Image (cartoon, rainbow, N blue to C red; front, top):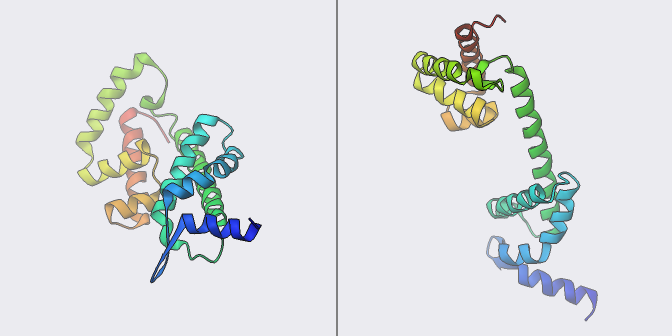
Length: 182
């Protein structure tokens, strides 16, 4: 079978077309391209277990974003770009979480000390009483879940600037309650 016939046969198994464009068969796409995507992801995340997790995230993203596939390029090109962008975003998120932890390293509940567990629990319960429900949700999404200001703004339904202001206010309250100057 000539190469062009083999390629068109693979494309036919992965794509079906409807009036508004191609529909991707994710199962067929996974079977035919998971190895390539795994090798791509390994360039960013050398741990096999983490790379496998990222591959699954990429294919979940492909399901969500299949409407962006126009059919101009091959599905492997589209998937390769999707995987690359996903890996870069994941690396940025990891860096942002590390920076957030470093920025808040002076807070007692972030220090690795069993002796402070009781103090930290008491401090958190005091803060829960001080913060309104929206501020508590924002702080949980930011400090615990590691979400960005933009992501939190979409969830809560306010501007990114408001999110930043609420986080700064909560951070000042936390430092004051913990007796930390700065």
